Length: 92
Image (cartoon, rainbow, N blue to C red; front, side):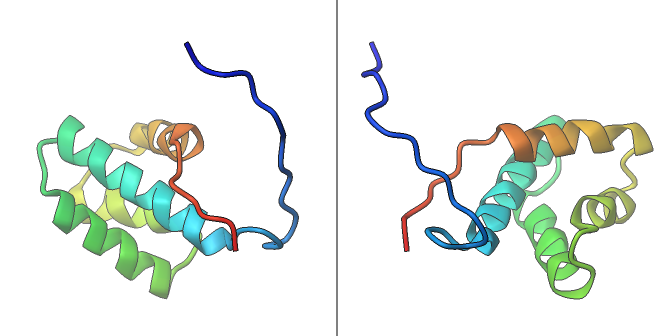
């Protein structure tokens, strides 16, 4: 049984936790998902996502789709993975 939450934290504009860490955590979750769902290499997927993050931030998932020929209708599922993942974050 999970304990009841004792506090709720709200972070605005990278005050407590850098957004880039959350994004990186989400992209790792996507790499795990596509490696399993589409039988591809986690490392290859993560490299594509990392490169896209450096070169075309905000279009990482589309770059992954293009690089591996994933159907366009996979985008909502990839977005859902990012939104639903449980990040491993440390407060700054």
